[in-house]
Length: 293
Image (cartoon, rainbow, N blue to C red; front, side, top):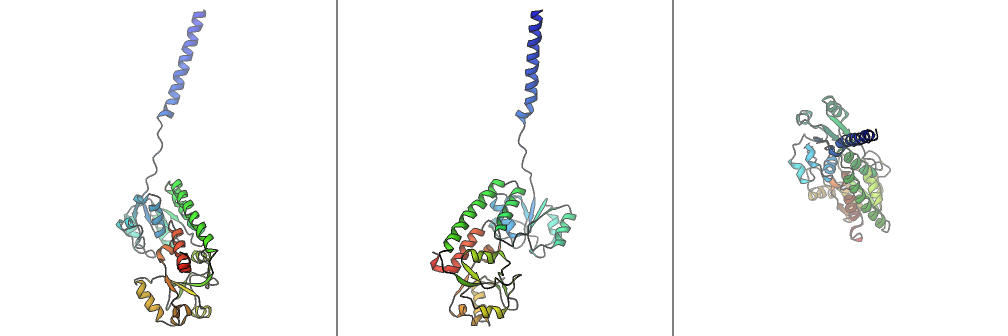
């Protein structure tokens, strides 16, 4: 009887061990799920730059004409301009996802959704901090969270140093020229570029205006110490400068007469993305000149 009991217990223990091993086997052999393989069309230059900075530029299958950085982006087929992309061309690329920012029409986004394409719309251009949100949200969508947080942390450290240094500098009254002539475009107080001017210790004379527009009368009345220029579409810096300094009322401004005119890379400053901290540094150099170096 004792032997039978011992045999029964031995069989029971072996059975339990086998069951445990069989139950554990799937866990031992389970492989991590592969990252979702997306195909993406970017409808915004800063989205394109962010994807490449995150190391997933290979997910892109299309871009706009304005998506010119990094150089590898130029190898992708273009769907047209930022404001009037070709829906037919876009759909023909068969993307899973389209990423857009502020300047894409609601009609186009709705058409993409109707075509079964997921749309990620990021309208974050009111504050500089929105840059971090843009990077973070794109990073989450393409499963590159750690990479995104590292980019953000690096940017934040650089921005902290720039802002701290700018506090020690004399302030200048600045006008940021985006366009001039029949339409006077500038970084008004409701724009993130105006916030950037404040971060580098400049006083934006157009801070009371809104929607990127300013009047010639106010420009003359506020007569800035410095004018930060961006080259006009289709022109070189030299061509833009020559036209600006020979056209009234810009030719009569004190900054023009004294030669206090400086160019910045409009693409870097205007695109909220991984290069925005670097753009802030360039803007600080433009505002403070040799004093910054």
